Length: 136
Image (cartoon, rainbow, N blue to C red; front, side, top):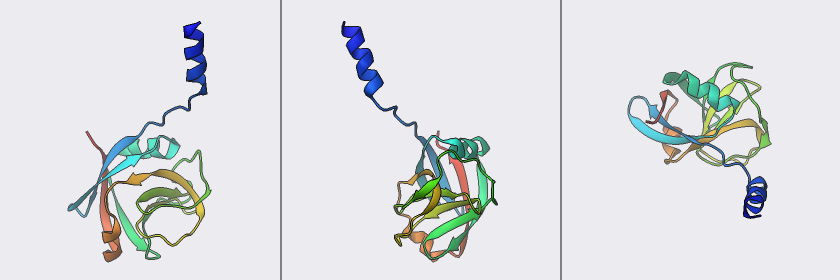
């Protein structure tokens, strides 16, 4: 009887999402820590780590690297808002973005994760070399 109740409780609980800690290095200087969600996009990115990309400052709110349309797989892209520090993938242009300033926009995105540190310093960059690696 106790086992049946425990089984019913387990079925009612939502599955805990797995997060992966990722170290992000900006221009071989600034170190950031991000928590990546578990989805098709993040699994693909993690399989490539460590890797370095050039990111450009766009719209005075985000750092962006364009893989090109279809550059990364998606499994949960939808229109939604964002928080400062979010890392997202914009499928139409295949853009990997760090959102460092809020403007209230809602856009189609696949959530990747969130940077735990202050990201406002990105406003001072026109571009940056960014390295991603799974944190040990």
